[in-house]
View 1: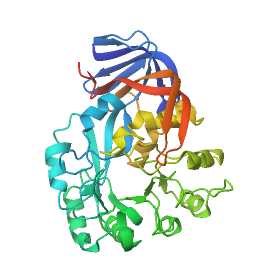
View 2: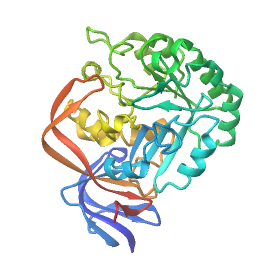
View 3: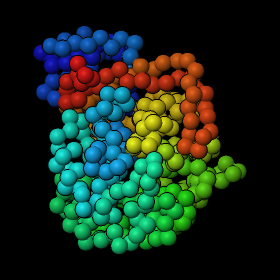
Length: 375
């Protein structure tokens, strides 16, 4: 008999083109089957709810206790419906070992990290103190980054670098160039953060390779990807054509409704929706992944696509086809969502408001084949 069955939910699994009311069964930590009238030792009635593959948040900061911006993945899994957290470079070569031993390995939910190219990682990020880890080039040692990445090749997804006025100050494009060298040396992709110039959007986009990720891809002016006339900038289109991956990374300062409307109107969807949740953005405007997904729903993106961009999209970006799917034999993670209607006040990162009529809320998650939501 199956270990767990979610009964009667609306199962939406974009990896299989599936959208129907049925049951999902889990056994031995894996997805066992999708079908009607399935039986299990633990049966959960989820009628009226949406059942999706376990959501993947491609941009989070969950080195809780080891960095000033870290939040607790376990709590966010409960409220935000996330079963896989991609940590976007909270730790660098100087403190990655602590992140691995004290947070990642004991975590009841999956955490997969990018290694920050800067030695201390994102070390001074809070509501009162903000010092970019790439503003001082003395903090970047490419050999140390290579060493730690290779020693943790079983875990590290790629190299994270933050450039822009806030993150790299007068260092400009140099930290990205070093990160690309490190990534090439260890055979991994780069995830690049870009805030206000310098460097320019063009400088960053021209350097990114197929499989590299631009996060904060719908950021507001300056360095926005869309022109005032609604046309997507040429360097953005060229980057997509050669295989650069575009990730939302909402965060506290990196997502604009005006940019999103322009990009969506031009037919340019992101490859992944992510929250960039950290100690500042967890109190708004990002809050969590489901809130960020809800904003896209209210901007006119259909539900199946929104779910795809939080499951199949990020799974593809990190080359983990066993995640973000409910195919039989895959990792036994799932998210149970309540699609509520009403009047909801959403904000982007520069204070523009959107009154939406729908909101996605977590009502439970399945982790490794077991119901996991505080009881």
